[in-house]
Amino acid sequence: MTQTRLLPHQNSRLYLTDGGFETTLIFHEGWDLPMGEAFVLLESEKGKNAIRGYFDRYLPMAAKHGAGFILESPTWRANPDWAAKVGYGRARLAELNRDGIKLMREVRAKYESQHTPILISGCIGPRGDGYDPGKLMTPKEAGDYHGWQIGIFCAESVDCVSAFTLTNVNEGLGIALAAKQADVACVISFTLETDGRLPTGEPLGEAIEIIDRKTGASPIYYMINCAHPTHFAPALDDKADWIKRLRAIRANSSCKSHAELDNSPELDTGNPRELGAQYADVLRRFPHINVLGGCCGTDYRHIACISDACGGGNRHVSLS
Image 1 (tube, rainbow, N blue to C red):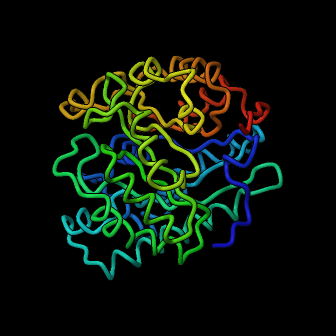
Image 2 (cartoon, helix red, strand yellow):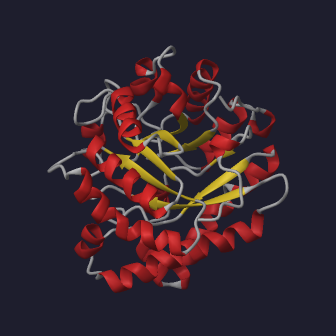
């Protein structure tokens, strides 16, 4: 595909992205989304306005700090298995995936400037639960399954696709291979347990090395999401080669384990200032990381504190 905008791994600029989209909609705005199926908001103008309003809180931060921004489409649950649970077949689901990208283009047109470049990422979620690996697919099965959604995003000319909250190597590998075949830039993001390992037990570095070895390092970079800095920061190896492939963090606000979060009736928003300081500590160790956002429990307040703590758009990073 034709690439017209620089991506984070090609650019010394700091990029912001949003916080916990689904948790904000459910706990702060009262939407009934029991499985996090935020793509259903694309069915109505009221729902689309909620998505527009959500991003309206974030984009001015990037403009203020001279940072770039990555718009993730509201499609984390918009894959066939999850959509079927709420009554959607593939034909309508395909339309909603396209509508999600079109809405992101609308948001970009409103806010993009020379000083605030905005990328559109087609957001892919796991086939199963984001905390529990469940039955593992083979890489081929994962590529065949997620390739359907990747194909839709490619047809809409996204800047990249990003696979979030992956629990196992096979699914990440399959997605990376499908994106490579589709010739689209791909980001692979794993969730980690309190010991800094994937839910299937592999160290993060091992997972990255396996995917890079089997794809010719085709993902443009890797990300950690849906884990707290106190869980993963101790497991990041300053001297390992793979650490340079990690360029993005979207942490949870809560330091609770996945099991504790699953059983919690209330949203743990943590301390935004403390989270910002924890991000800054990670970036002091790894100054090449240049994509910062949030995950469960975070909102615009957390991203504001993260941006302030990490230097906003005045911070430039190494491309190495």
